Amino acid sequence: MTTMTLSDAGLEAALRDLRVAAPPAVGFGALVEAGLADRYASIETPLGWAFVAWNGRGVSSIGRADDGAAFEARFRAEVGRDIAKADEVPERLGRAIASRIAGNRRVRIKLDLRGHTAFEVSVWMKALEIPHGEVRPYGWIAAEIGKPKAVRAVGTALAHNPVPLVVPCHRVVRSDGMIGQYSMGGPDAKRRVLSSEGLDTRWLEEEAAAGHRFTGSDTTHIVCNPTCRDARRVTPQHRVTFPSLAAAASSGYRPCLHCRPVSLAA
Amino acid sequence: MDTDVALAKRLARDLDAAFPVLVEAHQDRLYTIALRLLGDRRDAEEVAQDALVRAFRAMRGYQRERVATLRLRPWLASIAVNLARNRRRRADDRQPPNQLEPMLDTGFDLPADARSGPERRADLRETQRELVEALLRLTPAVRAAVVLRHVDGLSVTETAEALGRPEGTIKAQVHRGLRELRATFETSALRQPTTPALARAARLLPALEAIR
Image (cartoon, each protein chain N blue to C red):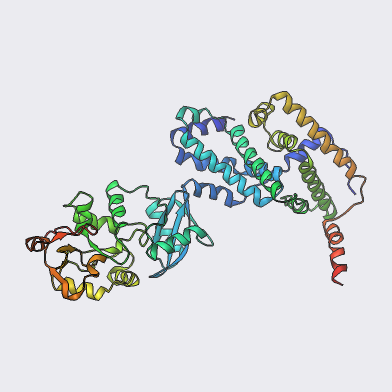
């Protein structure tokens, strides 16, 4: 049995002994909230399971990897921050990403794009404007961001998109209409993602091969990018195709205000 | 606290680079403060993490000069105390305080010592458990003063700064707190010895009878 007649010093020592070490989640969690470290977990995508990393400032990386260790290693090398596995993506974020992949452009997803150039960010933000199930050529992005000659740089920026699927770089195709490269697994993966959005990629590539770069309606005399939803509403008997915007213009067609087709460098 | 003065200057120079150092240096004490104020590990984890995050955001908004001259120990303690107070108020609105879990949450692993037998260790554990419970029975104002002054080890001046009360008030509150804690121990020495297992069995007994 304890007999306690505590001196002040004894009681003060007993109080000092009530100090404990914080569980590791406290410090790491604070670093994550401050955006100085990240957590990651897997999400389901049209390409199967992928990893998503996030911190207090937003989603910082999405990618496929053989396993978590490979994703972590790549993240540390490319981003330079510490990262740890979480059980799952926070519920709201998970729902927002799923909703965005399913085509809802309005759902808000914060992105942590620190460390990237203003040019890259402007390319990615422009890609976000391309509707679900539609594609635009690299040259379209270049023209829209006011750098019409920077077509190659646009391609490079898209290849470096740290958050594919959320920023839909898969909706940007080669200026000749062919499908082009894709950071998340090459052209086949890109076809799969676009198919999951309801786009007939075989039709798209056939049109491109046939030299049909633009689609118009002979009732409205408006010319569009071929996948623009306005173009796809045109019935076959009123549908006309053009190899160039100049050809469309000389036939009296004006560019669509929704998809804003641009002349593509030959 | 020379290291804190140097750390504040580093934070002012490069917040992102120096913040992990602050986390490493202060996470244990913020967690301890929150745990001893609230008595619940999960709440304490959240409060400690939140305190660090709020400190980071506050410093991001401050002028460099203000960050460089921050007195980190009392400043961080005041953030944790305020968050713990808000959390306790919200919890009080929801439900009466749970008296059982905090008792089980003393947060200790006593060193295995060959010379002190299992009985001695059980006694020590019991003592700490009682001290933790006794702390939680103090009024919030007195508890905060005792926790900052004697668990965390701030000076009277720093405690006064952290709690925004005059030093005289702090001294009186600490004095009163220690007196009440000591009284608890003197009473407990007269009580029947009890073990956690026995206490739990006693609580479960009515339920077991009911099942039968």
